[in-house]
Amino acid sequence: MPSTVVPAPAPSVPGSDGYRMPPESAEHEATIMAWPCRIELWKDMMPAAKLEYAGVANAIAQFEPVVMVASSGADATEARAVLTGGVDVVEIPLDDSWMRDSGPIFCIDDKGRRAGVHFRFDAWGGKYSGWDRDEQAGGLLARRYGDRAYDAPLVLEGGSVIIDAAGRMVTTEQCLLDAGRNPKQSKADIQSALADYLGATEVVWLGRGLFEDRDTDGHIDLVAAFTDSGSLLLQARPPADPNHEPMTLNREIALEAGFDVVDFGPLARAEIGGQTVVHSYLNFYLCNRAAVVPLTGQASMDTDEEALDLLRHAFPDREVVGIDGLTLAFGGGGPHCITQQIPARTCRS
Image 1 (tube, rainbow, N blue to C red):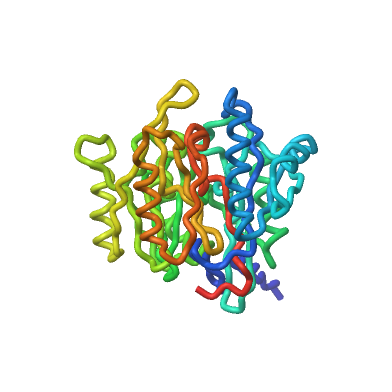
Image 2 (cartoon, rainbow, N blue to C red):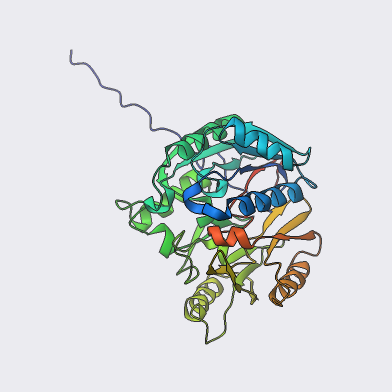
């Protein structure tokens, strides 16, 4: 008799197993960060970068535990010297320090169990040489802090997506359709992967990120963020600004999708390290009971106080904590870019 070949069962994915990515506003068990180590990026700004990373970590540690990943024993010793007791330093080899993008994304199921989803990482479409250690660290952290871990066959940076409590995910076509990341994946393929691996119930595709954002090719976390109530804070710019047209189009798309859009005007441009950088206040980080907001720290900038006032109004139940963030902007991001939340297992959103 001819033998019968039984096909192997298809591998399960988080979405079909009942897991989904909760919003950042849900309760956290801890926050993961990484100590700066890429000289190629920071150059002479490395000491200032380390001070600002420490400032972010110490601010978050007032509200929840922080895990700081250090690439070497020397880095770990250096980090411990400037971090508070609420920050646990662990040694894992790294190439860079943008944990939002190279780290895992954690999902929760209805029983409160947590899964770590490890996406592929290629240094923002190969913009830097050497990313193997970052990618390996993402998988290790997914297994360390998840009750189970999944490997997702998709290049995806955490800063390219945000999600609300209903599972509605917002991203930009500029980033997720960039040829340097998933050249063989169609828009439909990527949308399906977001549902499979992060439990997204809907994907809303905005057009572009900031005109000046050439580091990440339009990450959403520089131009949009959800409030606790589910409103969408969205970057707005005046007609003379180079970002006016793309931000106006993003607003139209978000309104058409049914979001409660709150226009957010402040955006700073400042001199640092011999160049003009764009400083996004929307790249704040929500930790338990607080919002950690980057500031330029320059007295001549009236946008710092304007941003803080708007965010206090947007988050009336959180303490809004301002921290120095201009060096982070020099590196291409802010507090949100250098953090990754570990949602609490008891999370219900």
